[in-house]
Length: 99
Length: 99
Image 1 (cartoon, one colour):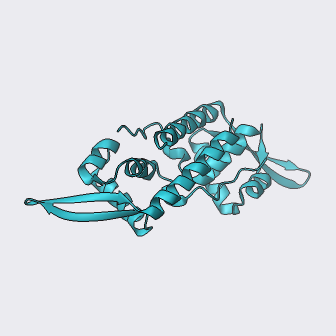
Image 2 (tube, rainbow over the protein chains, first blue to last red):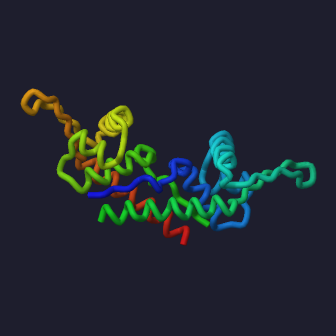
Image 3 (cartoon, rainbow over the protein chains, first blue to last red):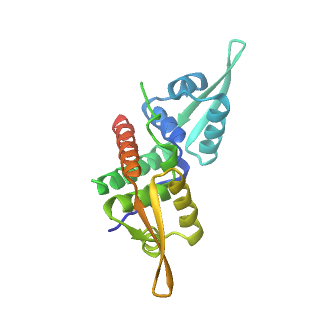
């Protein structure tokens, strides 16, 4: 029996990151509040996972003001989209292996 | 857009645990050496993840002697099989949502 886990990317291991990347794959860009609402996260949770994904180069973070209010938006990078697609592919192989 | 990550079980988040449970779902029981070889793990890595899965009640650990040699074998519990199947189902939903 061969179980390959090499292509499963440690950077996407947490369900929060799985959720974040899924949202960012389906949307051009999503702001902090929306991402927090969609995934039912705390500010701290979202900020720390976003920082880690940004450090990997998988997402881009833009901070701007809308009127007087600060606004943070996230976007998946091309690298992020590619690596996440590979990660999902590896998960799918593992799932198929469990059938 | 609805991304649900609640059913993704934190106990199976790490790829090592995904690999371990996959092997244990496909085999009645597997010993330490075989699991280590199959997943290319270190002793410490495998032992710590096995301990965590045992604590959750998802695997059973049996320690015995074969001749003079100590032998550790692992088996997925019914609870472990059920919860892992649910986990894979949730991952599959997330993957489908990314299509």
